[in-house]
Length: 194
Picture 1 (cartoon, rainbow, N blue to C red):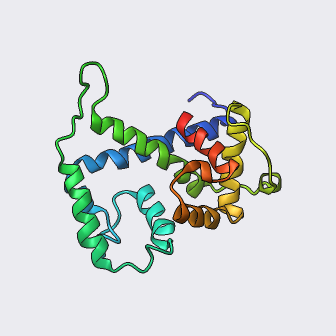
Picture 2 (spheres, one colour; picture 1 turned 30 degrees about the vertical axis):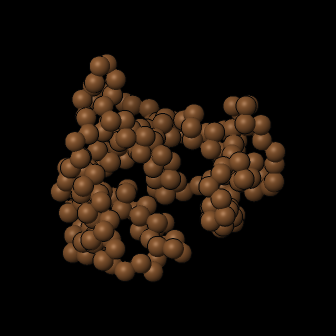
Picture 3 (cartoon, rainbow, N blue to C red; picture 1 turned 45 degrees about the horizontal axis):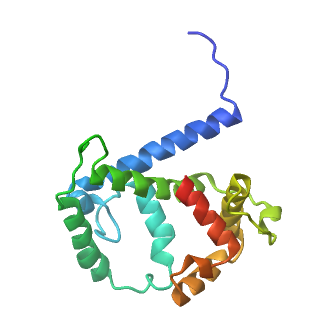
């Protein structure tokens, strides 16, 4: 066997991103089967071991702890949400390439996994605290460097600041993105571009 050099930190980070993307997409894609939700585990089935570790971790650590969702009855998940997911899985959505473009099912799976893989990476690897990111700043949404910095600061303030509470309160007041702070608007630009 030839000697191999250990991976650099940049290579490890890239490999982590690739593996997280692959696993997240795979877990989302599994839901094309109407019976995928039957093997999901809690809160849909109490006696099943989760078949989707990333999705299950995000659901149990974040979604189920939200103030408006933590007190919902188990039947809500086991009946209502279970049925909705099952019906979406059974829907006649195109999966093939239609006229040279991705089908609806593949497009949705790609979009959903792209959104989920960022919090999944943060959940799995953590986010080292950056005190500078917690300071109030101004962002130019037309400047790619500012948009990238806004995303970094957004994550920092979600994890180490009180941004989650601020977003929750503002979302209850309005559904207009322009009513949110500059940081949220710039971070939204990152999500759209990415």
